[in-house]
Amino acid sequence: MAKQVKLGDILGSELEEDFMDFDLTEIQEVLGALKNTDAIDLAHAEFLQQQSLRGADILVEYLGRIVKTVGYLEAKVNTVKNKASLDYKAPDGSRTTTDMRIWAGQSSLEVEEILIKLSKAKASKSVLEKKYDIMIKSHHHHKEIASGLRRSVLGYAGPTAPEGWE
Image 1 (cartoon, rainbow, N blue to C red):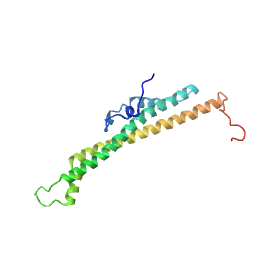
Image 2: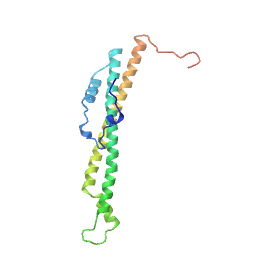
Image 3: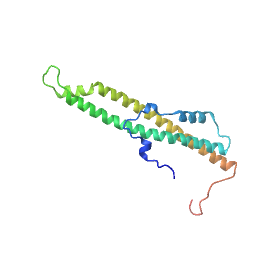
Image 4: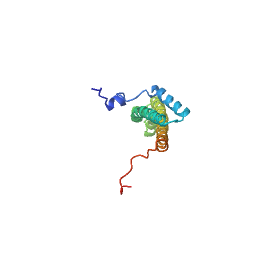
């Protein structure tokens, strides 16, 4: 029996993934091959379709992890900002105003560090989404090529609908 794979295995157990260490080697290899290769026959077009889907599958897993990380960092920045605001006391012992607390929360070094991580995570998510789009578009492109080759070379028109079902 095959090993059971659960969604938690794919998404990971950590709230904050080390997304900068995601391995995109296979993705870059597939994109490089797709860039430099034209489908020469039906089998080759179908192979390129499969490669595109393999790359998209890898990217979907990474996108799930990065979405989880972005959500976590957004929640964390709010929590840390609120804590910094609540803990702030005026340095001279005078009355602490609401504005002073808000500014303290917004200017906290810990908040700044989390915001930098969050911006990197959002940028990484954008890169992964664009690469995913390229993979899916490539898959459809090669699917069209394969379909055209089937019709023209092999004389295969595909299944036809029964009369009255058009």
